Length: 127
Image (cartoon, rainbow, N blue to C red; front, side):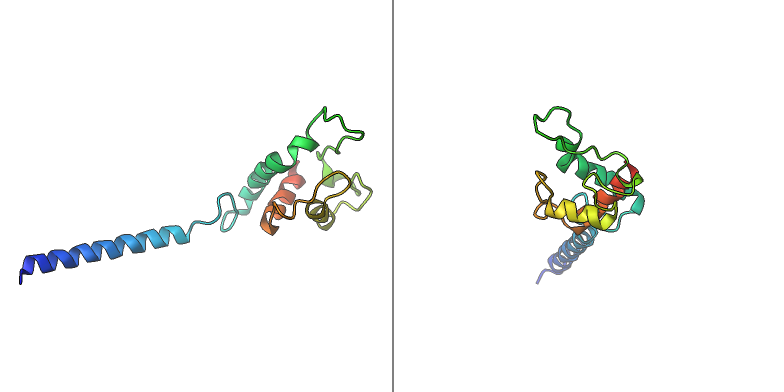
């Protein structure tokens, strides 16, 4: 039996275990790209802006959609007591509108999860 081969094999195995452990720990800290899972709350409006740009801006910030009625601009959405629909300007009402849709606005329940909607709401409070 070759002792140096046995020791070297043990060192290689130990290195592989260490590498696997390091990889597992690194991946455990990762989450879905862009989520605020573990992020500071201050980062949520930035992520909310990214979601807004991806899902909302194409209609709510557009100027020439050739529609009978343009979607409302969402600047200062929570500064008024009511939404453009006349409903109360609350997080719950905006969340419902985002998830269920309203009028020609499609529902986004299949595209956005609860965390996405919360980040989007945080951003809309700053817009």
